[in-house]
Image 1 (cartoon, rainbow, N blue to C red):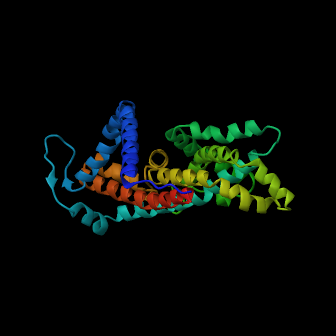
Image 2 (image 1 turned 180 degrees about the horizontal axis):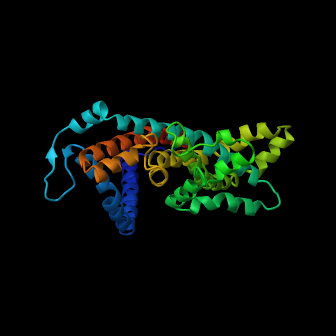
Image 3 (image 1 turned 30 degrees about the vertical axis):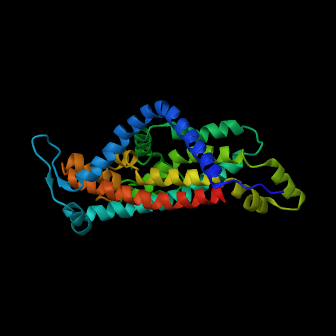
Length: 312
């Protein structure tokens, strides 16, 4: 026997459902409002104001009124600012290397430290400790490590007979960016390792045991059981890595200041330099807007694809 629902009854059910959802939203508003106001004031407003300033010429002083110049800042940025393209190239290199090197190392460390072994918690702590240091502290430490005369790197190379490899790691434009990136790896690997370790705890033990009973070996279990279970963790790590790579700033400032010869210049630092050192807030806002668009272009499509995969 089948039952049918009249259109009037269906509309009534939908109306009750909408009222129930509306009541829940209204009940949540007092709790959400303070956080939403703070988020809007300290994050959304400065971001929108930076985009607005990119269409003006302004020195940043109260005595001078901003002058509307339309898209002139963007035209100058793309056609007459060679430092912008150097910073753009370095930022893209930084993102690509961050997705390849630290993520791979973090996953390998997490897989290794997820096994039962002596001193496992100690190793986890040792690898995570650099992540709690302030970036400017990490920069100061690695400047000493790279010191041409007293630094650990050159002294070790000389001790093992490789003194010909000694060089000014932060003074050579060809390798300065990669020298800074090594410090970023040292600082960032531990945080991603913890995220992967948390993801590995969610891998169903029953599936792993069933795969072993079916004759699957380690690489097969990793590919067909572990990797699918780690997919939500991969989404989080990938998005956080892209965002942190694009906004890298204090590590570069502390180690090289963007030099030598702008070889370590990145978009976030160039936006800051244009605004607060060169007193050209229009150009600085234009660089920040380009950085925002790049971030959205990289993060939003992957996040949308990943969320659709979660719903399937």
